[in-house]
Image 1: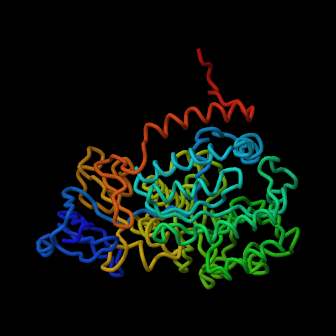
Image 2 (image 1 turned 180 degrees about the vertical axis):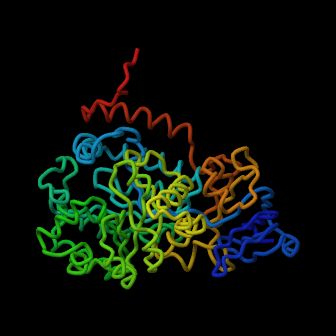
Image 3 (image 1 turned 60 degrees about the horizontal axis):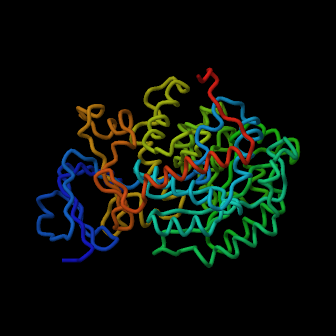
Length: 464
């Protein structure tokens, strides 16, 4: 018997293998950090394991992968609700984040990771770590907590946002040379560490925050290091106007001019691409992260996800951040992604439950460059697995567990989370984080941050 062996039995397994097999009364045998056998429970009885997990009335599936999120924004959850985008940035989000300390950054990251684990996320792409958040401390927390994550260092050399110039809060401004130097420092220290669970990426600021020269330099460095890069693109219609007025082209034209197209890039949001540009995204295998909750809350618009899927654009899902979504629950994100495109297309068949599960698993693995290791449950792949308890009122009866998960589920039904063969949560109890301590720290830190930032957050109704 392998000392680090786990046998999950009696489950309803969504394999996400190439045939998309579902195994009823299924079992998975894990040794170390890998899946060594998968099939019917009866056929896996021969395996002896140190830990036995009974998955009766549970869905067993690949861990969820959030490909666009902000670790630093968990601490400022609910601090910028029901305001316009420019005010959202200038009066709240940038001001608060521009007053972060490294301890704030660590507390927010751990609060965020706790919520992600609790709701079934096993891998994530943090899109922009500012120097003031403390990259090193965040990476140490990630190593200890046990998730799989790509940590992207902010890179910028301008202070604009799309066609609005010089609007960035001073505390958020960074120097290009210092940004690149920090990547050079953190890459050898953390990339590939924690048994390969940690990646170090480049996190480019949006249009208006990065000059073409710096875009091209980062594109070169990304490929030289064989890592990846991510940026917000096409989130706001101002992006389209910016590249047209300044460069005489469209979004993909600008990206092509600056070597940003390709599988190394994850474009977050991607709402305002023209129809003709979608074929270019598909041909270049440029990844799009769909963030439906953030896009609806900020009234940014609706990405052309049905068309992207039809053309073969690599699409994944992201929760974005605490002020723009307010949760890091990927199951809730799946539900919204499956719902919002149907009335737009006037077609209930577009973006199915199966489509969004694929986005949240395999799509995320493709975006992270880890699809040979995770994203599906197959022999030889790493054991990043979640169990979802379907024995709940809101999920009963689950005649079709796949659609029930998407249309009726939430992350609160996640029971067990395993990453790299190690349990991070069992019976809804986190094992690598002290949740009560984290929440206590978060409540304390947000009070200090609001006072330091001089940002006033209060209900619109009178408080007695």
